[in-house]
Amino acid sequence: MLCIDRPLRMIPAPPSSFKQYLSWLKDRREPSQEGQGLYLHMPWLFFHERLAPGLPGAVKLNGSVLRAQISKALKALHVEGRQRLAMISHPYQKDMMGVCNEKLLIYECYDEYAAGISSASQRRSIQEKEEGILRRADMVFITSKQLYKTRGPKNPNTFMAQNGVDYELFASPEGLADSFDPALASIPHPRIGF
Image (cartoon, rainbow, N blue to C red; front, side, top):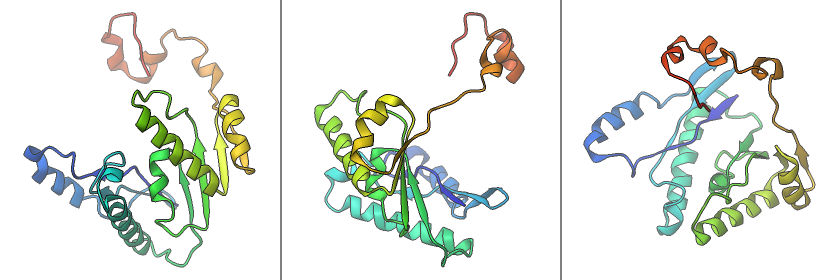
């Protein structure tokens, strides 16, 4: 399994650290093995997903660059002839559909992505992208009843898989954070964490 991490973008990189950024990027050209049969690859793009649609040809350029990097990563793993499945989890990834010539597209919808956006045009853009994903996806996984209610009718292969928690582990907050990281013990109460 090759997991493609969210791509880095070159344009927002601070010019003062550009040389360091290129060196760091060079070390991540090949997929890293994270477990038996599990690899992670972090590609790069020229333009951020929000910026690209406003620049002529930028979406197409990003797609071409990403397609080339994924193809190279797959060749490095010697899996060129295998069937491909792609899973995306954010409307900004709509423009990346098809870049690995996937036979099956899965969309994981875990949030109301447009809800926190103050710009009406950006909110509309996110909603339009999500509509396109819902029309194209072979399977959709939803994490809440409310999301299922609004997205489910838009794709006949929508399934709800609600978030879960190890209740016993989190049932009592006493000493929980300290048991994970002793460095947290020096932080005075009250503590807020995510």
